[in-house]
Image 1: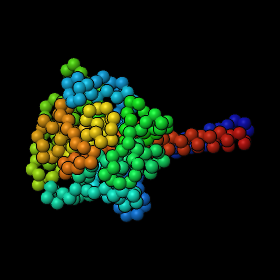
Image 2 (image 1 turned 30 degrees about the vertical axis):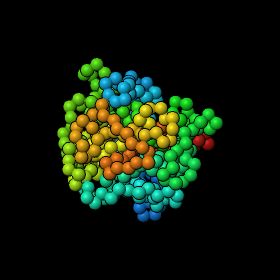
Image 3 (image 1 turned 90 degrees about the vertical axis):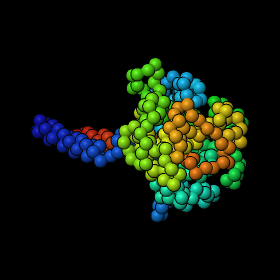
Image 4 (image 1 turned 60 degrees about the horizontal axis):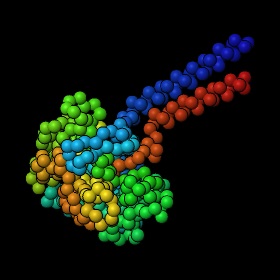
Length: 348
């Protein structure tokens, strides 16, 4: 009888494990690649929610690049995530519908390719981008990244100080250390664009262009071809949709070269000492030449300035902490089912 009971338990256990394994395989085939963390923001109403996909930037403690701007640049001491794509007009529209405090004005791109929902959000000041990021944080229960005294959109931030014991980080007074979402710093942006841990040519691990090449990308008006970027176009043609903005960087990020310039978190002088300091932006746009796409090109504007060629993207310390991968949920189910089998065995 014990042998029969054991065989019955073993058969049940194997069936459960096979079902769980099958479920894991099914989800793995349907889920996005394991390198992507997808986070949903916003409300349940029409046009009030959107998803952001993040790619991890690993290899913490990488060496600086000494050939680009700034020099040195590109070394980051920890793993972080960055948007696969630029922030779109639809995302900002959803923010405006949800935030209830500060509305962000979008550039009218009627004469620059149109105002399609999936075009990059342009005409965004640095302060507007920072407000957007603060909302992402509070949406998910994190502290705001940037310290604003009021909701007036033209107000500059106040850097965190030692008195702000929960938020202050001496290495970066702009960003709260409790925040999870933020604008990428100069080094974080540079690394995501130009660093390649698998590069075997040359004396370092950096490329001149974000398409993983030392040669200028192939010009495209929209597409995903390897080694291509949206630049060298007329003003009337405008930028491409954010998911159609050329080839990927070595880490798998689109549009870091061309389409639209992107704000960095960091002040142009690299000290983050004042809220009124000019901020860096870089990456080129659909209307600029190849030199603006290179690692040697970096520009600046006041945080209250806007331009129809400037947009932004978001970075995160851990997007997977917000939304676990589906495969991990199935693994949890597998262990749960295994525990149930063990419990049934004890009852017998």
